[in-house]
Image (cartoon, rainbow, N blue to C red):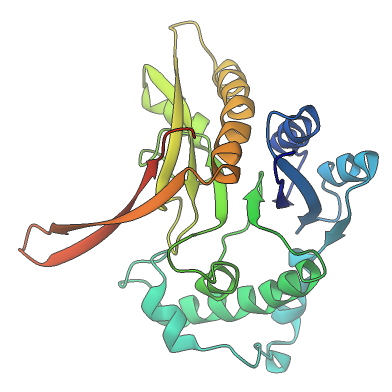
Length: 266
């Protein structure tokens, strides 16, 4: 019997990708076992999927946490191991031209929520953290405490566009409104930016003249439900390798980017 990886999942809504992963694990297409389902939203319908399948669930209510901070900012207490300078030096969510004080407030607020998320996850050891419609941006504070091995990231996300085009929350809508003839979805590792981590795999579909935003989304979701379990299986088989590729910028500066190599099946 093949060893199964332990999969943790974070959701914010209905959890259709969550269901696709559950189904793949139960059918044997993916050598994994889901050990928890967490959400930032107590009303997330996907939590019921966990109850139906006997998977532990929990909620860290981001909205209440953020509201509480706004109502009593003088009571803000970031985690003991919080280091603002470290987070600012790593984050690429905001350009350096942004209001630094607003960035700092965001980092503190999110870290307060993220430490509660980490505490809720702690009873459930996992090998891979799958974001399945989790609509909260993760900061370096959280990422560094999950990615403890610098050579093996273990937080993956599925995005509704062919990255790097159309990052953000409405990938299919942006693709349609731009007039693209090809749409698609991307599975990628999470890094310190917005949908900017190393790409694992992508699937594409044709956008016809008679397509609508709804039909484009439907086409994309059907591909997501195929692609996500497939990529998780590659992770389970140890076939995903992240390599560092040096390059020179336009100004001649030496830089480095991380790319994914999929190893052949054994």
